[in-house]
Amino acid sequence: MIIGRNMKKTFIGMVLFSLISALIFAAPSLEIEKIEKIQKVVQINQEDNDKTLVLKLRQKLILILFENPTTGYQWSIDAYCPRILEITDLDYLPDNQNELSVTGSGGKRIFNFSTKRAGETKLIIELRRPWEDPDAPAKTFSVTIKVVKD
Image (cartoon, rainbow, N blue to C red):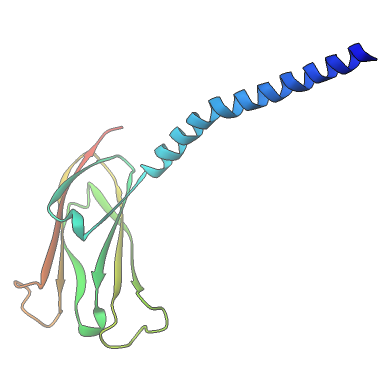
């Protein structure tokens, strides 16, 4: 009986050691997979104005800009190359969901893009009131996007 207990303890110890080793060695590969998934989507905002981004084919780009449409100001795309960059979604998210139409309440304009082919394009987005001078936007956001093959 004593020999059986020692063998049982040894067996349990070996199983525990194997499980712990597997978790320790699997964790870094799980982190690498997480990082690769995260890098498939690049998110930028006003702080990235006038920067250059290098993206891969089929990579997603999300641009978030503050906007106040209740006062007439809205972001609109002025220039980009649709052969290189495709707009996949455009949305507005108010800061306060209960104040959708309260004058002066702002929110975020969310542009979703996907890269289509290798190349370079300048993405220019302007903040303006539609009835005002089209040559004088209130603000301009610009970023150069270089799309490279995987």
